[in-house]
Length: 98
Image (tube, rainbow, N blue to C red; front, side, top):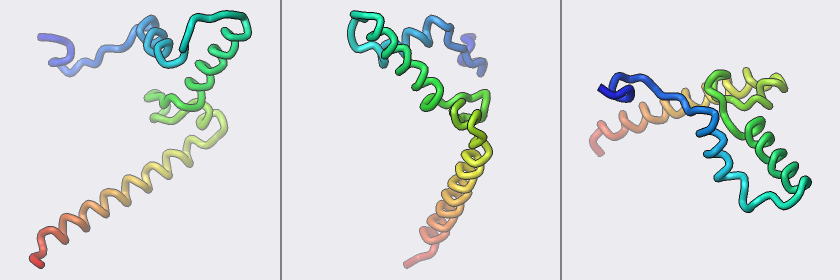
């Protein structure tokens, strides 16, 4: 039985992560040190401000370090609660004959 069928999630290796990000960040071969710095800065910026980390409840490291983690989670919880309530209301309305 494969690992996926057993419910075991496989983790990306470091090489797979870098290869995946390289596809999105490096448009052409590096031509200079400044070019490499620009690409490295873009890579770090993506990882710190865009990518959501499961280990810190799917928020960005920038939000966590700036102390916005709890606010982000509270906003997310409020949106989920509103969506659940909207779904309940919609389902009730669908059951009532017009």
